[in-house]
Length: 219
Length: 219
Image (cartoon, rainbow over all chains, first blue to last red; front, side, top):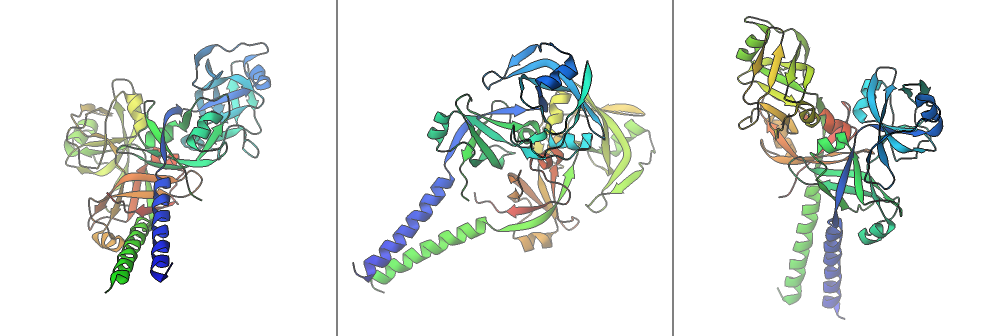
């Protein structure tokens, strides 16, 4: 090739790479949304302390994730500055108690916590739970839920993402925008759904009929 | 110019234009944030009905915008599904009563409204206000505040934006992201500050010490 062809080839490759980067940024996938209010998951031990040995929770309704359900029962959660009543229990029991509150609840309760994924509880603060048969002072497990997208490993393959990958989500509409740091949670017992909390939903006017778009981020 | 030079010039111009567009997209400016909870502005007539003729509000504190202040006084706002007590009044009185609630309050009150800029009240619903001397059923003025950035016309010139322009804002940090549809409100009696409500702040972990970045959007 002469000089002319080499220069032309280089410039065309640069243009194509720039175009590909832009298109990849716009690689979006529509996903249903599940909106969480504050709630908690109890260990068997803590359930016994709050509701009594042998107590059976009453299922209120099934949740979108397989085998997960909301219970009729609620507890009061208490911090140094205040209490929040009627916080919903989700079943079944887990190995560790986990209390998921809203950022706005931190002020009311007088606590400081972090956005964490379910199960990632090391170093998080505890909180006081009060039930009909007693109270429990947990030593950890108080979190604000980090936004995440549940999916099967097949969904993940189809969407071109992996379990644990961090993506962004885009919301359309007059209050729309982009939330960064959304974790992919892919395993074979999940239904495809993006989970955000009620403050995140309200801030962008998302409701249970909304769809969000997955955006793969470049780091 | 021969063919080689013409082609080269065209390709270089295309690359430069593409680079300029990318840089313009990343043109960001750090701005302080003001976070609003639900509040209302009263007309003199409605203030008279709620607090009695000749009543003087007690200033609680000055706000960041010149001549604006929070009053010690509050009212109860009531919708078909419920009431919210202790909603703060901001002074001074305005020509029209304007009640600014959170998206989450809509469910509690049982009302549907829209994100609107202050003063843009046509077609918005009314609400019942209850004060110590009486109640008022407004016919319009119930809004969720559209996020906006106050600034002087000099700030606007410096930032390269105009009054009424729609921009986006970027929030950094582990719960960060981008809010679209942020209106520029430029006039000579404003202090430079981005106003979002408490749900928008909590959703991205913004507090009164946070800075946001202005992003000019391409339409």
